[in-house]
Length: 572
Image 1 (cartoon, rainbow, N blue to C red):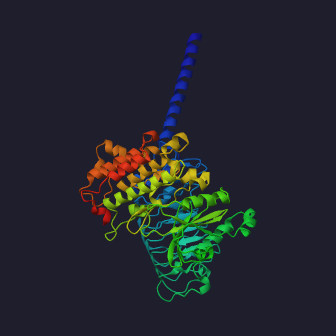
Image 2 (image 1 turned 90 degrees about the horizontal axis):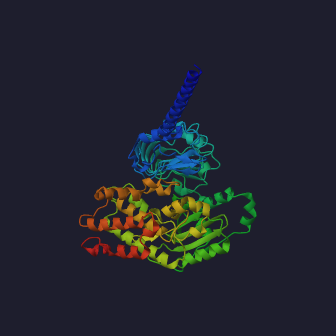
Image 3 (image 1 turned 30 degrees about the vertical axis):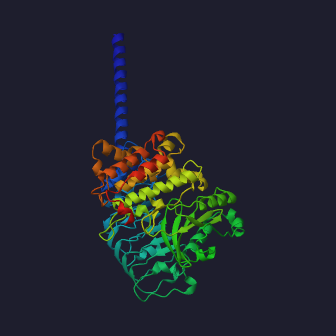
């Protein structure tokens, strides 16, 4: 009897343990299968997007964020939460599901620039805590309700440029207390400009619309170019309000600097140091008061096109070079200034201040390679053909080989990517942002520079003498496929979903012909050469850096390539 009781108790205990074990397994499976609320929200958002192949690594096998590290393409993380989305240049379209994003407690910034979204502007009041909203270069159309931005008291930056928006500018924008940057240029807005009251407004661009009437007094201190090409009746800007875009940006930067640096600012007026003899000299004041156009804002700073003495120059402002001493910086700039090659954009001048630096170069007529590969092309402006792409690859290879020969550092370029390849009037490539790795703040370099995205850095925590070769390989694949390698430009990218892996898989599946950019013309008699270049790109992207080509092998193989049977394409 006692034995039977013990057996019964043991059976119950065993059954209970088994139930707990099964329950624990089921719960763990549920967690693994369904992920966190943040994951579910993003996947719900993704479902409504068209052409979402660029975010294919959004899945429940891994959390979107681990502290500041992002595991999902385009997801910005802070303290383990989803701080924002940066999904640019991806060809995305479809519905922007704001209801999916609204429950995210830390969500503060959304960038969907340079995509194909169309139709009316969504009701972004659902994301009331947004600080920044970037929607430029899409196809949003129609009127925006006057109260569309009511209640968005945290909004600091709103970019809606180059869409097809009509009607009047919503007056609710004029009452947003923290708004500092507003870009509405390149639309079809009409009527009068609202009387913006924000004292902290730094930029307000409404050029290239159908606006009329006077410029509000509250905005008269901003650059007049921001109001150009409106309909007649606009008030002519007074002489004292001449364009001082660069100057205002520099003053804003000074205001943002800690008070502890105020003494050094007063005693360090600084001056431009010129490195090129064949450029017309100008002083810092000329540069800061010149008519200027914002070209873009990247991971290291903003770029401006300025007209000084009749010659266009590009000024790039860096905020992440303040860990290097003055003499060390001067010496490194002089070293860069001595580099002269057909495929390098020469550094013309620079300006030193402890908290920010300005680098001045000449203006490249045809913009960046990235803009040609990933811009919205039309019948008037077709994509780059095969011959031009091969010409660009050869030029980049020559410029990179020159840097390898001249600079005794591990990764002589350090940040090779399509937006750092500029094109002159004949589409000759010019490398820019080269050799800056030694003067960039280490923490910023590790987060954003291409040299720190390489497989060897991800696996071993160090770069190699073939890191720039890997960057070049990724660039070749981008040029051939037309696909933007956004995973490498996002911290914590998923290496299993990268461009090289995708191309490799397509080749293994005997689908090589499908990888090439459909907008690439002039390929009829060139398939063999295109495949050769594809193989060179893959050889440069080998995960084990010992197996990659070295720079001499790269040059030899690239120079052997032909456009087709007619080599006259180089002279066209």
